[in-house]
Image (cartoon, rainbow, N blue to C red; front, side, top):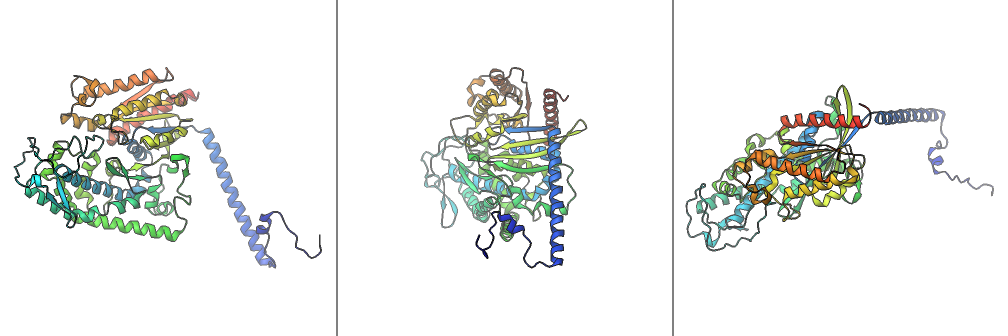
Length: 538
């Protein structure tokens, strides 16, 4: 070594940890105290991690998958679990659901206006944003009787033609141009003009909630990823400091997304690490929500007038306009919602329609028989394109709750408008029952949306029109529900990879909190009893 040359150290950390040059005794003492404090904190964290690992190893942990097609009620069921076992966490999220309720209402208004335009051949004067009757319907306007079918116009209007699309909740059946009284056209034109400011906020509000408006066949939806509630409200730490400690545990963890990528709320890709940018984004969201709230307060009477208009009632009666159950709930409660300081009720949150992308994991600590068990609940995206992302979660799954919306017997998949939604549920359930990966997994079947099924049957909608195998059986709730129960049980019996595995079947309406609580309790006890028995712990 040449004398006078600096000594090179191969360890870069030694340079970082080395004391600063010309360090005084006071500076040295202060540095050593800080290092000792840092080591003490690090040791405490390590010990907590070690104890948590031991606790998890000793304690039984249930891994529960919620599976089913899109709009089957999986997220609603997850919210029911949250209401039962982590109500404090739902209170923290409550303000995050305000814009979701708003966008559900705006979307419903848009669907009503678009369907009116389509079904009655109403042309829009784009310069003045007003409805005008088409030439075919402007000469004579008969009086409408909601109890009698309307007489189609002999001349086709200029509206675009559309094939029957039962997958779209807003329309059904082939287009039949009908005449419209001029007074109705003028009323609807005025309402549309007054509602334009509210409608114009839909896309901005959607983008501030999640990934914005994405087009699905026949309609638009808002899609969100895990953790969207967290970026809509103040940091959880701040909220917890001012709130009593929750009595239950609920947490969102990183989600498995399509293409196998993993993203968490703390990653650089999902949330900006710049606090100023985060605050600016939150301020922008708050301002948009405030604007929408003010617009809804000013226009709620117009929204109600549109919903109650005879033209809308006529389309609903003829099943040319199908409004989702959540839409009907919010319109019926509009006077309560359209206030400056609106706070969603539990029922509002349960009925708020929002699609989740990928797979979202939730953790609950659930008491049973004087002991607390950890439950990891996975809520999955149900569209066909998202189903491959379920497979990594099959390993070590304790149980599956499969949700099949039997009210959808007269609807078709958005992704494939030739496939009946009940048929799709049966095909999907067949795959679940026959999968070797799920051989040791307990199966629970929720034949869901029985409340909607009852209403459809009371309206006189015939099951055999859409499911020919139903034949000439009576078109009442008991016979129809028993028919679907028998079919799903037959699928399980023929395709079950383990002949000893039982199927727990329930007819459900997961928006009904009282009945769902009892079902969840029964399911919880059944899953734990079988799981502990197999684990030789009972």
